[in-house]
Amino acid sequence: MAKSHGSYWDLGSKIAVAFVFTAWSLDSHLFIKVEQRAESASVELFAFAEDDTALGPFGLVHVIKSAVIAEMKSNTAAADYGLVFSSHPAMTIDNQGLVCLWLQAVSQNGPDSPVYETIIQVHGVAGSLSAKRQFNQAL
Image (cartoon, rainbow, N blue to C red; front, side):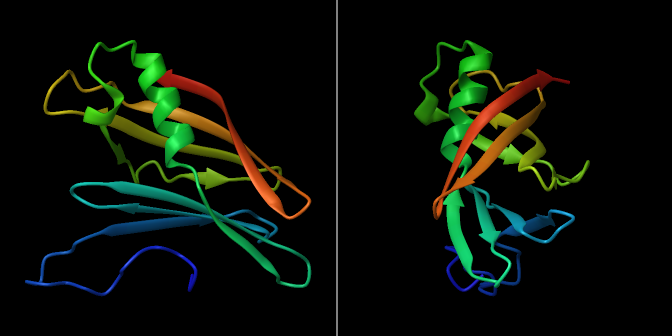
């Protein structure tokens, strides 16, 4: 977590500035963290080798956002949308790198999207991580 880009304990005027939720793969080799703020969201993936060497953070928000905006077929610019991630149902990540999460794209200048169940396939190869959208389904 020391490499993560969040700032967790700055409560300012005692209002939570971020909601953080996480998930581990069952074999504890993959870890995903979502940090939701009023003005932004981040999704970071970390991979851990057998010797506990860490790889990451690998940002997933761009992969997710482009897939959701394309699915919406909206005339509103992608930059006008922000992502809101749901903590219920909880996101999951399995030992093969399938990430399942629920989210909505919201904008002040266009229609909000429906809530999407999104599945991302994450691959680790030669010390690097990559991700590809597998599935989007409006709920």
